[in-house]
Amino acid sequence: MTTVRVWDLPTRLFHWALVACVAGLFATAYVPDAQILWHARLGYAVLALLLFRLVWGVVGGRWSRFSAFVYAPRSVFNYLRGKAHPDHLVGHNPLGAASVFAMLAVLLAQVGTGLVSDDEIAFTGPLNRFVAAGKGLAATWYHKQVGQWLIVALVALHVLAIGYYLLRKKDNLVRPMVRGDKAVSRPVPSSRDDAASRIAALLVFGVCAGAVYWVAGL
Image 1 (cartoon, one colour):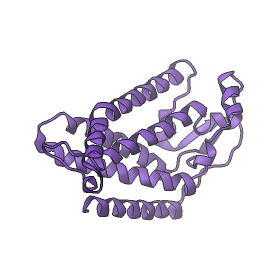
Image 2: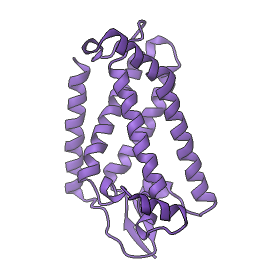
Image 3: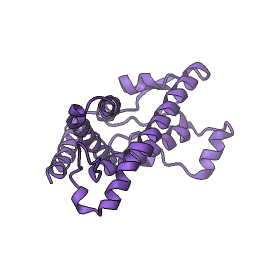
């Protein structure tokens, strides 16, 4: 066995910050209207994190890049048949990759509909005035009645998958996302995780956060 840096620090910080923000969004969604401001702020934070992850998925560490876990249908089929490629056991396996892409898509849809929503009570999204009234109301309906429950379903599946891999396959998927390193059976390239890459990640996040701040102020 050899130890390899799988998840760089920016990826790990993104992951846990996203967990905290999504939890906060659900908490603020079901408290008195005075908390709608914090709900919106957390939504903006999630958007900044998602934009960062999209960029980091192109320029980030080896195993954080989308190219590392975009699998061909044949590769997915072989994995499901128990014929995993060695790379499946390092970063995201095909099922984990599908979960990542689904979560990114659903969260982007959720924050997108939030930006154009209008609940006609306490909150109007900063981009609402750029869409027709009917579309704004439809986005609000999706945001409240569909999107949040899709997120709940994906989170539940994610937690169940972690439990399954831990209990049945003795593979702790949480530890590498905390420590960054993972023990693998063969030497593989490590994700770059030095001071330069971390500074680059900070700059990327700063640009993403600035863009979201501009959108929020429209």
